[in-house]
Length: 258
Image (tube, rainbow, N blue to C red; front, side, top):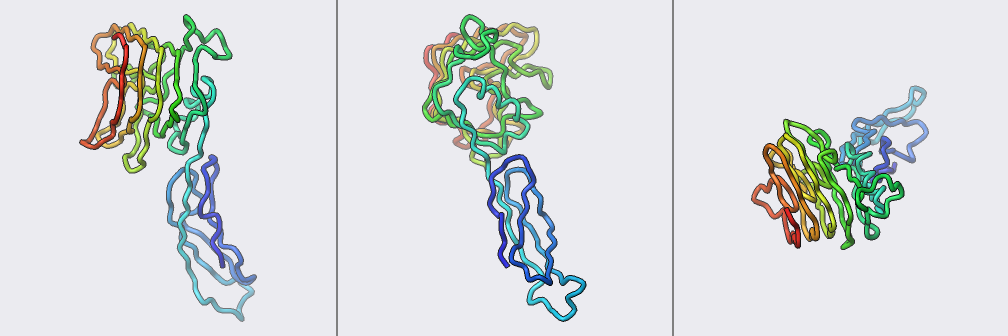
């Protein structure tokens, strides 16, 4: 007997460990099979004789297996593909994103999305469904974005606004937003609510444990004009959690006017 399909890549469908090469008089049943999301799952296999196999006996009746579902890698090459992370943000823990080239918002296909040559951005994530994955910029640049109050989400009595409105992931996952430069962003926020905002992320962390690491990030040549009843603002992140660990490394902010 061989145990098959124990290591698979996420594609949104349920995955099943399979006991193959069973004797013709033996059948298998499973507990813990049929998982969909990224993770490591224990599967218990039980072997039984078929009803017409009275002349046979089993040398063993159980097996244990581990079903491992790994994330799907998504390579982003256009501003539209970057924006489309929002379409699957509720399942973002099942993906790992990386840039395949520079992303220039001014090159959007839909020119009606442009404000003074910058792409009108819709922020990724919320408290309900934070960005719970990683983005590796591969040392490329994201540029020419326009962010206003409508780019963000309003939850828990405040607006969260940024390229990522809210990011949050388990530290055990070792997830990072990294190796990326962000430039030529215009932020123009005018509201009578509380605002939590940063060019990269409005809020990083949910509760006190779920934090996405940020490293090797440069933000440059951008403006942040904010009017609100109260503001938590930073060039990179408006509000962040740390847990006394090294989640934030080598973040540079150059020529930003707030």
